[in-house]
Length: 102
Image (cartoon, rainbow, N blue to C red; front, side, top):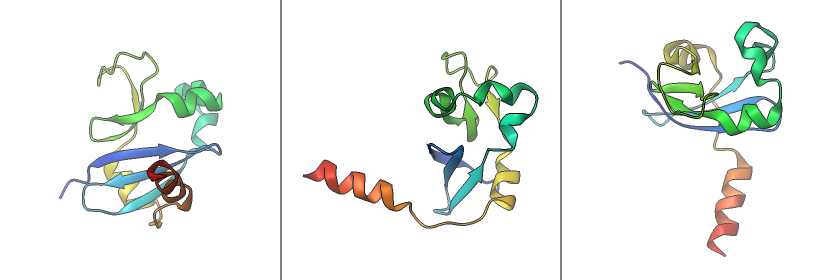
């Protein structure tokens, strides 16, 4: 099975919750990644969060705003699946969902 990311939720501390097709939730810590090479463009937390998306079935950052899968920063989904720890649904998302329901 090739792991596929179906949803991402970036946080204010350079972490991203990764939701995989098989139901697993993983947590990726990008705090070291943003210190290297092309990923330094993500050091602005607003850019990190606003461009974070799913492209090519994985975690990606759409810096051009064109949703072009050939023009994004993305990470290997298999590496993310194998190296990131499993986590539970983040409580802040559940709280937001409850507030939205009124």
